[in-house]
Image (cartoon, rainbow, N blue to C red):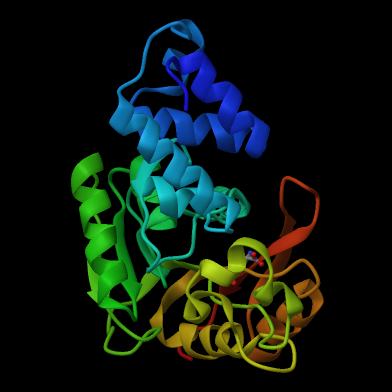
Amino acid sequence: MADTIGECLGYARQRLPRLEADLLVSGSLGVPRSHLYAFEERTVDPSAGTRLTDWIGRRERGEPVAYILGRRGFWGLDLEVTPDVLVPRPDTETLVEVALVMVSDESSVLDIGTGCGNAALAIASERPGAQVTATDIDPACIALCRRNAERLGLTVTTRIADCFAGLDDRFDVVLANPPYVDDADPRLRQGDLRFEPRRALVGGPNGGLDIVARLIRESPDHLATGGWLCLEHGDEQGEAVASLFEDRGFADIRGHVDFANRPRVTVGCWREERS
Ligand code: GLN
């Protein structure tokens, strides 16, 4: 099919968008992307060529690039990902950015529904003194989060838990990128979402806010006085989420926009002594 790196790039770019093509060529050859452009004349191993052809076919059938590569960058961290977890999205870097304002090196932090651990590990990388706990209902996610933490040399405590179930500590900051897509959203049957775990995406009928509402309802029992709850949500859910925070008695409720200027993260402070 192609004898040199340059020919592999040409072949892949004819079939896929340029960035996806280059990521698959670099992954299938096992070299960094910068290497591709510096050594276009180099010949490639036939087995790498076969792998590339297979990967391009998988991408053409819709499989997310991150699942094919088994890797995804998030917050500058190179993370292992598998089809057990949602592919970390740049959108969730907004959640991390917003949460970090409230997190010091003395804070205790809880990331609920951590998936591959992306948000928890990003926080641990920025605040090495903070006590970061990551939970997920799925043992496969927790195993993956642990592998990522170990490979990156970052410390997080992990727990298999359904939301707050079984956790008796109080935290200074609780954050989550929960499932918040409406069960009936047609996007679930299109594109990359078809390949991602439904459990990580779907937040119930009538707006997709069942899990968000549950986290807002239950979090006061798990927040220190003056602690913050930070939640990612869909760009049309900002007002509904803010009302849920308000009805529960949170203070200092604020919405934050993502890099595309859409309202995607809402935070609130729990000021009461008791819930
Ligand atoms: N932001 C994702 C999407 O709509 C959904 C992630 C989530 O439900 N937590 O593609």
